[in-house]
Image 1: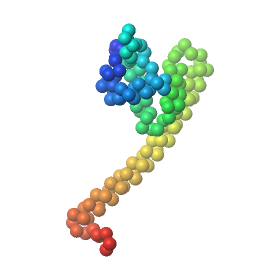
Image 2: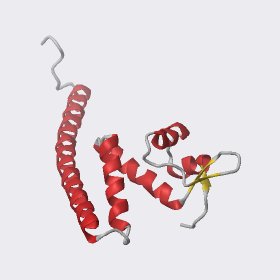
Image 3: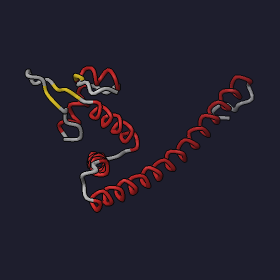
Image 4: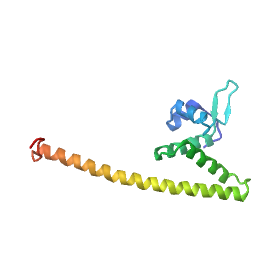
Length: 140
């Protein structure tokens, strides 16, 4: 990616988030725009877009706004080589804990996926039986 500054509309189109959602993430201080035009329009950097994409990955895993903020803060602290080693070490520990949380949520989702597949197979079997006349009608 380049260092170009993108308007909120360009960001919305590029990553598929609504303008309202992007503004909300600004309001809750997850992703403030890097700059503004003289007219006050938001401008987003590639780093801002990357942060929004990361939030988009956390959202379906039911991360709270506080957790999202904590992850983003830890990433910033870890990436900033000017930070003392103890600050970076704490950021690393926090990210490792979130990695474990993601693993736990992934296991939960995989269990739900198995259940969904089983349910889908059951429905397909019922439909097949109904089509071939081997199914039981309700009340029999």
